[in-house]
Each structure stands twice: as structure tokens, then as C-alpha cells.
Amino acid sequence: MLQELTPELLLCGYQMGLFPMADEDGEIGWYSPDPRCVFEFDRFHIPHGLKPVLRRGVFEVRVDTAFEDVIQACADRDEGTWISPEIMRVYTELHHLGFAHSVETWRDGRLAGGLYGVAIGGAFFGESMFHRVTDASKVALVALMRRLEQRGFTLVDTQWATPHLQRFGAVEIPRDEYLRRLDRAIGLACSFVDRTCD
Image 1 (cartoon, helix red, strand yellow):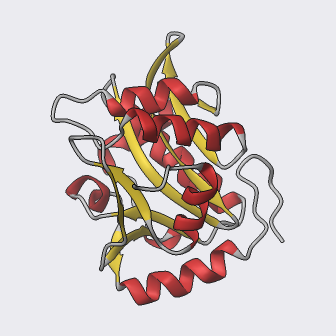
Image 2: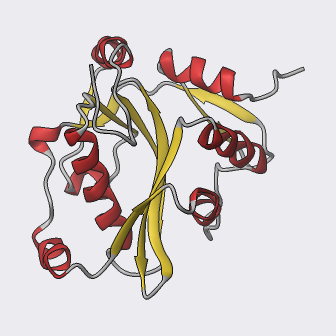
């Protein structure tokens, strides 16, 4: 019998370089890609077309005000999803424990887009994003990167490379290098909600 997915197991997996995904039958598998995709703060790139949107302040950015709505919206996609009810349950528990976070973009009082992930020490593990309004998730990503850099995070994990992430400067690194960076990052005392990092 497969072990039940719990917040403790999830945190342990992340610290070992693993993350879970559910298949179409809801079975949970653990993954550790090689190479691994990450964002580097000095190589993060804001696409030219997004800069006017950021300047105009089209969206209001909020943090951790609608976590369950964000993860549900990330799961609601036409092409199927790896975010099963069990995944939603355990990440919501992680959110209540202070490890899982959402960055949301709002427009006219409505949730327009956002992303969620897990913060451990100085590492942030991005999980998924969605948008209902053009550019909403992109603005959330920029807000996330600014927040993490301000708070002294050193590792931003995006799991696998996609053309969308690569437009923002995401790069692939060997798993061995990723694990070395991970080991250093999780030893930091950064806070996603405060500005402190030791």
C-alpha cells in the first residue's frame, strides 16, 4: 500500500530534491528531473511587452489571501492536471502550516491569476500558475521573484523547463548541482512573509 501523502512527507521530499505529481488515476509519483530548471536572479528577464503592464499597475498583487482559490484554479485546466484532490488537500495543509504560499493578481476585485509554491529555508519550489486575464500570471511571477530576492532566497526551483519559463530566463542545471544548491539553501533562515534572513 502506498504511503499517504502528508505535509511531513512532502517537506521531506522537497529537502531531498523530490516533488509529487498525480497521474490521471490520482496515483502519486515522486520526481527529480535531471536536468532541473531554476531561475537565477541575475538572469531573470522581464519580457519587453510585459513592462508597460507592470508600469501601469494593471493588477493588484496580494500574497496568501486566496491560496485555496489559486490551487483550485491551477487544477482546473482543459488538458488535464497533476493536481489531484489529495495534492490540493496536502498543499492546503502546508499553507496553514506556513510553508505553502500563493502570489495572486487581482483586477477589479476579482482573482485574475496567480501561482503557488513551497518555501523551505532559502529555497522556493514553484508548483503551478494560472491566469484568467492576459498577463496576470506573468505579473505574479515577477512579483514572486522580487519578493524572493528581497528576502534573501537563493534557490528558485521551477522543476522542468518550458518555453514560457525560458522567456523569463529560466535555465537548466544538472541535478547534482541542483542538490548542492538545495542543501545550502534549505539551511538558510529566510521568511517568505518577513524580510528576515540569517
